[in-house]
Length: 474
Ligand SMILES: [Zn+2]
Image (cartoon, rainbow, N blue to C red; front, side, top):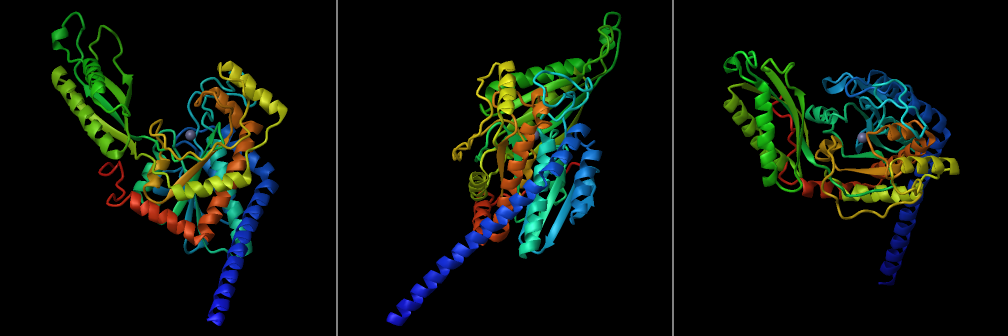
Protein backbone atom coordinates (compact mmCIF):
# COMPACT_ATOMS: atom_id res chain seq x y z
CA UNK A 1 0.00 0.00 0.00
CA UNK A 2 2.71 2.38 1.15
CA UNK A 3 4.79 1.75 -1.94
CA UNK A 4 1.82 2.39 -4.21
CA UNK A 5 1.08 5.54 -2.25
CA UNK A 6 4.70 6.68 -2.63
CA UNK A 7 4.59 5.93 -6.35
CA UNK A 8 1.39 7.93 -6.66
CA UNK A 9 2.97 10.85 -4.81
CA UNK A 10 6.04 10.61 -7.03
CA UNK A 11 3.84 10.52 -10.14
CA UNK A 12 1.82 13.52 -9.02
CA UNK A 13 4.97 15.44 -8.12
CA UNK A 14 6.37 14.53 -11.54
CA UNK A 15 3.11 15.63 -13.21
CA UNK A 16 3.23 18.95 -11.38
CA UNK A 17 6.87 19.40 -12.32
CA UNK A 18 6.14 18.48 -15.93
CA UNK A 19 3.18 20.85 -16.03
CA UNK A 20 5.34 23.55 -14.51
CA UNK A 21 8.08 22.87 -17.04
CA UNK A 22 5.54 22.94 -19.87
CA UNK A 23 4.08 26.24 -18.65
CA UNK A 24 7.53 27.68 -18.13
CA UNK A 25 8.48 26.43 -21.61
CA UNK A 26 5.38 28.06 -23.12
CA UNK A 27 6.13 31.34 -21.35
CA UNK A 28 9.72 31.14 -22.55
CA UNK A 29 8.63 30.61 -26.18
CA UNK A 30 6.20 33.52 -25.93
CA UNK A 31 8.89 35.82 -24.53
CA UNK A 32 11.19 34.78 -27.39
CA UNK A 33 8.47 35.65 -29.92
CA UNK A 34 7.88 39.01 -28.20
CA UNK A 35 11.63 39.71 -28.27
CA UNK A 36 11.70 39.01 -32.02
CA UNK A 37 8.81 41.45 -32.55
CA UNK A 38 10.55 44.12 -30.41
CA UNK A 39 13.88 43.65 -32.19
CA UNK A 40 12.25 43.95 -35.60
CA UNK A 41 9.70 46.64 -34.74
CA UNK A 42 11.49 49.27 -36.87
CA UNK A 43 11.23 47.13 -40.01
CA UNK A 44 7.66 46.07 -39.22
CA UNK A 45 6.62 49.72 -38.91
CA UNK A 46 8.33 50.48 -42.24
CA UNK A 47 6.34 47.71 -43.96
CA UNK A 48 3.11 48.93 -42.38
CA UNK A 49 3.82 52.51 -43.47
CA UNK A 50 4.59 51.31 -47.00
CA UNK A 51 1.23 49.49 -47.21
CA UNK A 52 -0.40 52.63 -45.75
CA UNK A 53 1.18 54.69 -48.54
CA UNK A 54 0.20 52.24 -51.28
CA UNK A 55 -3.42 52.55 -50.03
CA UNK A 56 -4.81 50.09 -52.58
CA UNK A 57 -8.53 49.27 -52.61
CA UNK A 58 -10.18 45.84 -52.75
CA UNK A 59 -8.73 43.46 -55.37
CA UNK A 60 -6.23 46.12 -56.48
CA UNK A 61 -3.76 45.49 -53.61
CA UNK A 62 -0.95 44.48 -56.00
CA UNK A 63 1.95 46.26 -54.30
CA UNK A 64 0.69 45.65 -50.75
CA UNK A 65 0.23 41.90 -51.32
CA UNK A 66 3.61 41.68 -53.10
CA UNK A 67 5.43 43.42 -50.25
CA UNK A 68 3.93 41.15 -47.58
CA UNK A 69 4.39 37.99 -49.66
CA UNK A 70 7.99 38.91 -50.61
CA UNK A 71 8.85 39.60 -46.96
CA UNK A 72 7.45 36.25 -45.85
CA UNK A 73 9.26 34.48 -48.68
CA UNK A 74 12.57 36.11 -47.79
CA UNK A 75 12.06 35.00 -44.19
CA UNK A 76 11.73 31.36 -45.20
CA UNK A 77 8.00 30.90 -45.85
CA UNK A 78 6.72 28.90 -48.77
CA UNK A 79 4.59 31.43 -50.67
CA UNK A 80 1.82 30.73 -53.17
CA UNK A 81 0.48 33.79 -54.97
CA UNK A 82 -2.79 34.43 -56.74
CA UNK A 83 -4.63 31.70 -54.82
CA UNK A 84 -8.39 31.09 -55.27
CA UNK A 85 -8.19 32.89 -58.63
CA UNK A 86 -7.65 36.22 -56.83
CA UNK A 87 -4.42 37.88 -58.08
CA UNK A 88 -3.84 39.69 -54.75
CA UNK A 89 -4.54 36.72 -52.47
CA UNK A 90 -1.69 34.52 -51.24
CA UNK A 91 -0.70 31.96 -48.65
CA UNK A 92 2.66 31.72 -46.87
CA UNK A 93 3.37 28.43 -45.14
CA UNK A 94 6.06 27.21 -42.77
CA UNK A 95 6.57 23.95 -40.90
CA UNK A 96 5.35 20.42 -41.30
CA UNK A 97 2.51 18.24 -40.14
CA UNK A 98 -0.17 18.98 -37.61
CA UNK A 99 -1.52 20.98 -35.99
CA UNK A 100 -2.06 23.46 -38.81
CA UNK A 101 -2.74 26.96 -37.49
CA UNK A 102 -3.88 29.87 -39.69
CA UNK A 103 -3.11 33.54 -39.11
CA UNK A 104 -5.31 35.90 -41.13
CA UNK A 105 -3.95 39.09 -42.67
CA UNK A 106 -5.74 41.91 -44.54
CA UNK A 107 -4.36 44.93 -46.43
CA UNK A 108 -7.06 46.67 -48.48
CA UNK A 109 -7.76 50.42 -48.22
CA UNK A 110 -11.01 52.36 -48.69
CA UNK A 111 -11.89 54.69 -51.56
CA UNK A 112 -11.78 58.50 -51.17
CA UNK A 113 -10.15 58.58 -47.73
CA UNK A 114 -6.71 59.90 -48.67
CA UNK A 115 -5.30 61.68 -45.62
CA UNK A 116 -1.99 62.84 -44.15
CA UNK A 117 -0.77 60.76 -41.20
CA UNK A 118 -0.43 62.17 -37.71
CA UNK A 119 -2.55 65.29 -38.20
CA UNK A 120 -5.77 66.12 -36.39
CA UNK A 121 -7.63 67.72 -39.27
CA UNK A 122 -8.93 66.46 -42.59
CA UNK A 123 -6.04 66.89 -45.02
CA UNK A 124 -6.12 64.62 -48.10
CA UNK A 125 -2.73 63.77 -49.60
CA UNK A 126 -4.39 63.31 -52.99
CA UNK A 127 -7.99 64.49 -53.26
CA UNK A 128 -10.31 61.54 -53.91
CA UNK A 129 -7.58 58.88 -53.60
CA UNK A 130 -7.96 55.88 -51.26
CA UNK A 131 -6.75 55.69 -47.65
CA UNK A 132 -6.44 53.16 -44.81
CA UNK A 133 -9.58 54.15 -42.92
CA UNK A 134 -9.92 50.73 -41.27
CA UNK A 135 -6.24 50.23 -40.38
CA UNK A 136 -5.73 47.17 -42.59
CA UNK A 137 -2.10 48.22 -43.17
CA UNK A 138 -1.59 47.49 -39.46
CA UNK A 139 -3.72 44.34 -39.70
CA UNK A 140 -1.61 42.69 -42.41
CA UNK A 141 1.70 43.48 -40.75
CA UNK A 142 0.79 42.47 -37.16
CA UNK A 143 -0.30 39.08 -38.51
CA UNK A 144 2.93 38.82 -40.52
CA UNK A 145 4.97 39.65 -37.40
CA UNK A 146 3.09 36.97 -35.45
CA UNK A 147 3.72 34.36 -38.16
CA UNK A 148 7.43 35.12 -38.49
CA UNK A 149 8.13 35.35 -34.75
CA UNK A 150 6.35 32.02 -34.17
CA UNK A 151 8.34 30.44 -36.99
CA UNK A 152 11.60 31.63 -35.37
CA UNK A 153 10.57 30.09 -32.03
CA UNK A 154 9.37 26.85 -33.66
CA UNK A 155 12.69 26.51 -35.45
CA UNK A 156 14.76 27.25 -32.37
CA UNK A 157 12.79 25.06 -29.98
CA UNK A 158 11.88 22.27 -32.39
CA UNK A 159 8.12 22.86 -32.08
CA UNK A 160 6.18 20.75 -34.60
CA UNK A 161 3.24 21.76 -36.75
CA UNK A 162 2.47 24.11 -39.60
CA UNK A 163 1.61 27.80 -39.65
CA UNK A 164 -0.07 29.47 -42.60
CA UNK A 165 -0.31 33.22 -43.11
CA UNK A 166 -3.34 34.01 -45.26
CA UNK A 167 -2.96 37.11 -47.41
CA UNK A 168 -6.65 38.00 -47.69
CA UNK A 169 -7.60 40.77 -50.14
CA UNK A 170 -10.88 42.68 -50.43
CA UNK A 171 -12.22 42.52 -46.88
CA UNK A 172 -13.95 45.86 -47.32
CA UNK A 173 -16.13 44.46 -50.09
CA UNK A 174 -16.60 41.24 -48.08
CA UNK A 175 -15.23 39.21 -50.97
CA UNK A 176 -11.71 37.89 -50.26
CA UNK A 177 -12.22 35.19 -47.64
CA UNK A 178 -15.60 34.18 -49.05
CA UNK A 179 -13.95 33.26 -52.35
CA UNK A 180 -10.93 31.71 -50.61
CA UNK A 181 -13.27 29.66 -48.39
CA UNK A 182 -15.31 28.52 -51.40
CA UNK A 183 -12.07 27.26 -52.97
CA UNK A 184 -11.33 25.24 -49.81
CA UNK A 185 -8.23 27.20 -48.79
CA UNK A 186 -9.02 27.04 -45.07
CA UNK A 187 -10.06 23.38 -45.03
CA UNK A 188 -6.77 22.03 -43.70
CA UNK A 189 -6.76 24.31 -40.64
CA UNK A 190 -7.10 22.99 -37.10
CA UNK A 191 -7.66 26.54 -35.80
CA UNK A 192 -7.11 30.18 -36.79
CA UNK A 193 -6.43 33.51 -35.13
CA UNK A 194 -7.17 37.01 -36.29
CA UNK A 195 -7.44 40.57 -34.97
CA UNK A 196 -8.66 44.00 -35.91
CA UNK A 197 -7.43 47.49 -35.00
CA UNK A 198 -9.78 49.14 -32.53
CA UNK A 199 -10.17 51.78 -29.85
CA UNK A 200 -10.11 49.24 -27.01
CA UNK A 201 -7.83 46.42 -25.89
CA UNK A 202 -10.46 43.73 -25.89
CA UNK A 203 -11.51 40.17 -26.49
CA UNK A 204 -15.19 39.39 -26.83
CA UNK A 205 -17.58 36.72 -28.02
CA UNK A 206 -19.29 39.28 -30.29
CA UNK A 207 -20.76 37.98 -33.50
CA UNK A 208 -21.30 39.87 -36.75
CA UNK A 209 -24.22 39.85 -39.16
CA UNK A 210 -24.59 37.44 -42.05
CA UNK A 211 -24.96 39.26 -45.37
CA UNK A 212 -25.90 39.00 -49.03
CA UNK A 213 -24.66 41.76 -51.35
CA UNK A 214 -26.34 41.92 -54.76
CA UNK A 215 -27.25 44.20 -57.64
CA UNK A 216 -30.69 44.48 -59.24
CA UNK A 217 -30.62 45.76 -62.82
CA UNK A 218 -33.78 46.69 -64.73
CA UNK A 219 -34.02 47.18 -68.49
CA UNK A 220 -36.90 49.00 -70.19
CA UNK A 221 -37.28 51.23 -73.24
CA UNK A 222 -36.49 54.91 -73.84
CA UNK A 223 -39.09 57.36 -75.17
CA UNK A 224 -39.65 61.12 -75.16
CA UNK A 225 -40.87 61.72 -71.59
CA UNK A 226 -43.34 64.37 -72.80
CA UNK A 227 -43.77 63.59 -76.53
CA UNK A 228 -44.56 59.87 -76.47
CA UNK A 229 -44.29 58.59 -72.88
CA UNK A 230 -46.68 55.73 -73.73
CA UNK A 231 -43.86 54.18 -75.75
CA UNK A 232 -41.53 54.21 -72.78
CA UNK A 233 -40.90 51.56 -70.12
CA UNK A 234 -39.05 53.17 -67.24
CA UNK A 235 -36.31 51.16 -65.54
CA UNK A 236 -36.12 53.89 -62.90
CA UNK A 237 -39.78 53.26 -62.03
CA UNK A 238 -38.83 49.66 -61.36
CA UNK A 239 -35.95 50.65 -59.06
CA UNK A 240 -38.25 53.04 -57.17
CA UNK A 241 -41.02 50.47 -56.92
CA UNK A 242 -38.60 47.84 -55.64
CA UNK A 243 -37.25 50.24 -53.00
CA UNK A 244 -40.79 51.14 -51.99
CA UNK A 245 -41.72 47.49 -51.62
CA UNK A 246 -38.63 46.75 -49.57
CA UNK A 247 -39.30 49.76 -47.35
CA UNK A 248 -42.81 48.40 -46.72
CA UNK A 249 -41.24 45.03 -45.89
CA UNK A 250 -39.03 46.59 -43.19
CA UNK A 251 -41.89 46.64 -40.72
CA UNK A 252 -42.22 42.89 -41.02
CA UNK A 253 -38.67 41.68 -40.44
CA UNK A 254 -36.85 40.91 -37.20
CA UNK A 255 -35.48 44.01 -35.43
CA UNK A 256 -31.94 42.67 -35.91
CA UNK A 257 -32.32 42.62 -39.72
CA UNK A 258 -30.68 45.39 -41.72
CA UNK A 259 -31.43 46.20 -45.37
CA UNK A 260 -29.76 49.07 -47.20
CA UNK A 261 -29.37 50.18 -50.80
CA UNK A 262 -27.88 52.76 -53.11
CA UNK A 263 -28.99 53.59 -56.65
CA UNK A 264 -26.08 53.11 -59.03
CA UNK A 265 -27.87 54.11 -62.21
CA UNK A 266 -31.14 55.98 -62.66
CA UNK A 267 -31.16 57.48 -66.14
CA UNK A 268 -29.46 60.40 -67.85
CA UNK A 269 -31.98 63.21 -68.46
CA UNK A 270 -35.54 63.97 -67.27
CA UNK A 271 -36.85 64.11 -70.82
CA UNK A 272 -35.65 60.61 -71.70
CA UNK A 273 -37.49 57.69 -70.11
CA UNK A 274 -34.61 55.67 -68.57
CA UNK A 275 -34.14 52.27 -70.20
CA UNK A 276 -31.58 51.17 -67.61
CA UNK A 277 -31.52 51.55 -63.83
CA UNK A 278 -29.65 49.65 -61.18
CA UNK A 279 -29.56 49.41 -57.41
CA UNK A 280 -27.10 47.72 -55.05
CA UNK A 281 -28.51 46.05 -51.96
CA UNK A 282 -27.20 44.58 -48.70
CA UNK A 283 -29.47 42.24 -46.77
CA UNK A 284 -28.11 41.45 -43.31
CA UNK A 285 -29.48 39.24 -40.55
CA UNK A 286 -28.38 37.14 -37.59
CA UNK A 287 -27.51 34.03 -39.59
CA UNK A 288 -27.43 32.54 -43.09
CA UNK A 289 -30.93 31.05 -42.79
CA UNK A 290 -32.45 34.45 -42.00
CA UNK A 291 -30.44 36.18 -44.74
CA UNK A 292 -31.65 33.61 -47.28
CA UNK A 293 -35.24 34.06 -46.15
CA UNK A 294 -35.19 37.86 -46.47
CA UNK A 295 -33.10 37.74 -49.66
CA UNK A 296 -35.77 35.58 -51.31
CA UNK A 297 -38.48 38.03 -50.20
CA UNK A 298 -36.53 41.00 -51.63
CA UNK A 299 -36.07 39.08 -54.91
CA UNK A 300 -39.84 38.55 -55.11
CA UNK A 301 -40.35 42.31 -54.63
CA UNK A 302 -37.84 42.99 -57.43
CA UNK A 303 -39.71 40.58 -59.72
CA UNK A 304 -42.99 42.29 -58.87
CA UNK A 305 -41.45 45.70 -59.63
CA UNK A 306 -40.28 44.40 -63.02
CA UNK A 307 -43.70 42.96 -63.77
CA UNK A 308 -45.48 46.19 -62.83
CA UNK A 309 -43.21 48.32 -65.01
CA UNK A 310 -42.89 45.90 -67.94
CA UNK A 311 -39.12 45.88 -67.51
CA UNK A 312 -36.64 43.04 -67.39
CA UNK A 313 -34.85 42.17 -64.20
CA UNK A 314 -31.36 40.78 -63.73
CA UNK A 315 -29.99 39.87 -60.29
CA UNK A 316 -26.26 39.57 -59.63
CA UNK A 317 -25.27 38.09 -56.28
CA UNK A 318 -21.90 39.73 -55.60
CA UNK A 319 -20.99 38.12 -52.31
CA UNK A 320 -22.31 36.74 -49.07
CA UNK A 321 -20.98 35.92 -45.63
CA UNK A 322 -21.95 34.05 -42.50
CA UNK A 323 -22.35 35.54 -39.06
CA UNK A 324 -19.23 35.20 -36.89
CA UNK A 325 -18.91 32.08 -34.77
CA UNK A 326 -16.43 32.98 -32.03
CA UNK A 327 -14.61 30.12 -30.34
CA UNK A 328 -14.62 30.73 -26.59
CA UNK A 329 -11.64 28.49 -25.84
CA UNK A 330 -9.41 30.46 -28.24
CA UNK A 331 -10.95 33.76 -27.12
CA UNK A 332 -9.99 32.91 -23.52
CA UNK A 333 -6.45 32.09 -24.63
CA UNK A 334 -6.36 35.40 -26.50
CA UNK A 335 -7.45 37.22 -23.37
CA UNK A 336 -4.78 35.56 -21.21
CA UNK A 337 -2.21 36.54 -23.81
CA UNK A 338 -3.55 40.08 -23.98
CA UNK A 339 -3.02 40.23 -20.19
CA UNK A 340 0.49 38.91 -20.66
CA UNK A 341 1.32 41.48 -23.35
CA UNK A 342 -0.49 44.35 -21.63
CA UNK A 343 -2.06 47.46 -23.11
CA UNK A 344 0.14 49.67 -25.30
CA UNK A 345 1.58 52.71 -23.46
CA UNK A 346 1.17 56.10 -25.07
CA UNK A 347 3.20 59.29 -24.64
CA UNK A 348 1.75 62.63 -23.51
CA UNK A 349 1.97 63.88 -27.11
CA UNK A 350 0.03 60.85 -28.38
CA UNK A 351 -2.61 61.38 -25.68
CA UNK A 352 -2.92 65.05 -26.63
CA UNK A 353 -3.21 64.09 -30.30
CA UNK A 354 -6.00 61.64 -29.39
CA UNK A 355 -7.85 64.24 -27.30
CA UNK A 356 -7.72 66.70 -30.19
CA UNK A 357 -9.35 64.13 -32.45
CA UNK A 358 -11.99 63.43 -29.80
CA UNK A 359 -12.64 67.18 -29.52
CA UNK A 360 -13.15 67.32 -33.28
CA UNK A 361 -15.74 64.53 -33.11
CA UNK A 362 -17.46 66.03 -30.06
CA UNK A 363 -16.62 62.91 -28.02
CA UNK A 364 -15.43 62.68 -24.47
CA UNK A 365 -11.81 63.87 -24.35
CA UNK A 366 -10.48 60.88 -22.46
CA UNK A 367 -7.46 60.16 -24.67
CA UNK A 368 -6.31 56.65 -25.60
CA UNK A 369 -7.24 53.71 -23.43
CA UNK A 370 -4.24 52.17 -21.66
CA UNK A 371 -6.34 49.52 -19.99
CA UNK A 372 -7.70 46.10 -20.87
CA UNK A 373 -11.45 45.79 -21.14
CA UNK A 374 -12.90 42.91 -19.11
CA UNK A 375 -13.41 39.70 -21.11
CA UNK A 376 -16.83 40.17 -22.70
CA UNK A 377 -18.84 37.00 -22.10
CA UNK A 378 -22.17 38.34 -23.34
CA UNK A 379 -22.00 38.43 -27.13
CA UNK A 380 -23.25 41.50 -28.96
CA UNK A 381 -25.38 40.32 -31.86
CA UNK A 382 -25.36 42.87 -34.62
CA UNK A 383 -23.19 45.57 -36.07
CA UNK A 384 -21.46 45.05 -39.37
CA UNK A 385 -20.35 42.01 -41.30
CA UNK A 386 -16.92 40.59 -41.99
CA UNK A 387 -15.57 37.85 -44.19
CA UNK A 388 -13.49 36.58 -41.24
CA UNK A 389 -16.81 34.93 -40.33
CA UNK A 390 -16.40 32.51 -43.26
CA UNK A 391 -13.26 31.03 -41.68
CA UNK A 392 -15.03 30.82 -38.30
CA UNK A 393 -17.46 28.25 -39.77
CA UNK A 394 -14.62 26.14 -41.18
CA UNK A 395 -12.35 25.91 -38.12
CA UNK A 396 -12.30 27.26 -34.55
CA UNK A 397 -11.34 30.96 -34.61
CA UNK A 398 -11.22 33.98 -32.31
CA UNK A 399 -10.01 37.54 -32.61
CA UNK A 400 -8.51 40.29 -30.49
CA UNK A 401 -8.65 44.10 -30.68
CA UNK A 402 -5.94 46.50 -29.63
CA UNK A 403 -5.99 50.28 -29.34
CA UNK A 404 -4.90 51.85 -32.63
CA UNK A 405 -7.21 54.90 -32.45
CA UNK A 406 -8.94 56.90 -29.71
CA UNK A 407 -12.48 55.97 -28.73
CA UNK A 408 -15.29 58.17 -30.06
CA UNK A 409 -13.67 58.72 -33.46
CA UNK A 410 -15.57 57.67 -36.59
CA UNK A 411 -14.31 54.60 -38.49
CA UNK A 412 -13.92 54.51 -42.26
CA UNK A 413 -12.97 58.13 -41.73
CA UNK A 414 -9.88 60.33 -42.34
CA UNK A 415 -9.12 60.25 -38.58
CA UNK A 416 -8.45 56.49 -38.68
CA UNK A 417 -6.23 56.96 -41.74
CA UNK A 418 -4.31 59.56 -39.76
CA UNK A 419 -3.83 57.19 -36.78
CA UNK A 420 -3.00 54.14 -38.95
CA UNK A 421 0.09 55.84 -40.34
CA UNK A 422 1.10 57.22 -36.93
CA UNK A 423 2.90 55.91 -33.82
CA UNK A 424 -0.49 55.27 -32.13
CA UNK A 425 -1.43 52.73 -34.79
CA UNK A 426 2.09 51.24 -34.77
CA UNK A 427 1.91 50.59 -31.02
CA UNK A 428 -1.46 48.87 -31.30
CA UNK A 429 -0.11 46.80 -34.20
CA UNK A 430 2.93 45.55 -32.24
CA UNK A 431 0.75 44.63 -29.23
CA UNK A 432 -1.64 42.71 -31.50
CA UNK A 433 1.30 40.91 -33.15
CA UNK A 434 2.43 39.65 -29.73
CA UNK A 435 -1.03 38.44 -28.70
CA UNK A 436 -1.46 36.59 -32.01
CA UNK A 437 2.02 35.05 -31.70
CA UNK A 438 1.34 33.88 -28.14
CA UNK A 439 -2.05 32.38 -29.06
CA UNK A 440 -0.57 30.65 -32.11
CA UNK A 441 2.12 29.13 -29.86
CA UNK A 442 -0.61 28.01 -27.44
CA UNK A 443 -2.53 26.33 -30.26
CA UNK A 444 0.64 24.62 -31.51
CA UNK A 445 1.80 23.33 -28.12
CA UNK A 446 -1.21 23.06 -25.82
CA UNK A 447 -2.95 19.87 -26.92
CA UNK A 448 -5.75 20.35 -24.40
CA UNK A 449 -6.55 23.86 -25.62
CA UNK A 450 -6.76 22.76 -29.24
CA UNK A 451 -8.90 19.79 -28.28
CA UNK A 452 -11.24 22.01 -26.27
CA UNK A 453 -11.49 24.50 -29.14
CA UNK A 454 -12.29 21.69 -31.58
CA UNK A 455 -14.92 20.09 -29.37
CA UNK A 456 -16.63 23.45 -28.91
CA UNK A 457 -16.52 24.01 -32.68
CA UNK A 458 -17.95 20.54 -33.43
CA UNK A 459 -20.80 21.16 -31.02
CA UNK A 460 -21.59 24.61 -32.44
CA UNK A 461 -21.55 23.42 -36.05
CA UNK A 462 -23.19 20.02 -35.50
CA UNK A 463 -25.32 19.16 -38.49
CA UNK A 464 -24.33 22.37 -40.27
CA UNK A 465 -21.75 21.54 -42.90
CA UNK A 466 -20.04 24.69 -44.23
CA UNK A 467 -21.89 25.85 -47.32
CA UNK A 468 -20.50 28.80 -49.25
CA UNK A 469 -22.94 31.72 -49.67
CA UNK A 470 -21.68 31.70 -53.28
CA UNK A 471 -22.59 28.05 -53.94
CA UNK A 472 -23.86 27.79 -57.48
CA UNK A 473 -22.45 31.22 -58.43
CA UNK A 474 -19.57 31.24 -60.95
ZN1 LIG B 1 -11.60 46.52 -41.18
